[in-house]
Length: 151
Length: 151
Image 1 (spheres, helix red, strand yellow):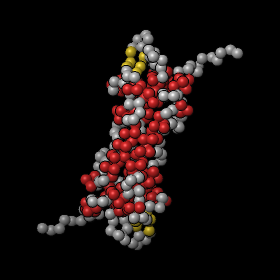
Image 2: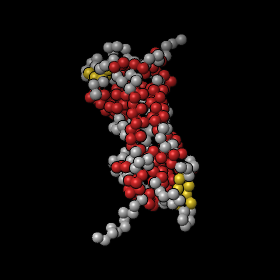
Image 3: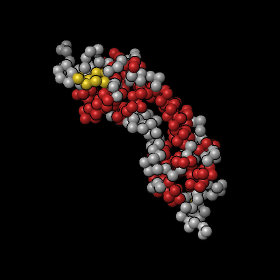
Image 4: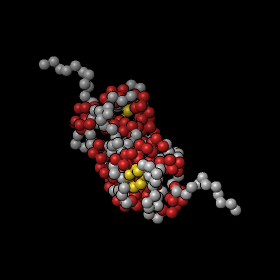
């Protein structure tokens, strides 16, 4: 069972933005470099996060990407629900399953998916950076390409 | 979020076998025809279900596929757990995620997946054919290729 890469990368972008110093903007090149993800995919994801009202992108000098809400206002279940194409864990419709009219499995799977989402709904982006923010900043924001200070 | 087709088809095969009259054997061609699924895929799935001790395949005349356990002994969560390649809904490892050492998301997703599986563990194959067995038999076992009786 897997979430799409789309959802995975969206959560990584949001985590990145959540540890940015207040007032600072991120850019896609930085995020791409730090997570080793394609700029092309990230552009689409950031655009989608913008459509959902979770991030904003400002153009020009001093521009960039930032969160439009506080981390504690961004619910993980909501992000997953918005980014996934479907929450039906089995596709009964594309090549229609013959037993669909009599199938109980789809109801059981829907109940299980509901339990999955209820758990995610208990968490926000703030929980992803709760006691590990300093470590995330070290990994994501410290410029590892700068020459090491001379001894 | 999706389960693999492998798991989907395994559950369809088990449902088919669960509505077979006691003592009768199914064959892959029938299952393939009824669900409109490739024989090649079904062979692999039936073989895997055999490895897991859920079905047996007898060769020769009067041979075929049948359940090795009663439907109420075949747990849906167990089948899903056996058939899925992974229950990690995000792949943190294949191209290793940089924030893995500091990531709380993986724990939250594991908790949600646990809730998903706890729900599935409450059901068995018997629940899939509880009050709809006659309808499933109509769909799966009645030979729709036979000419309609003459009026």
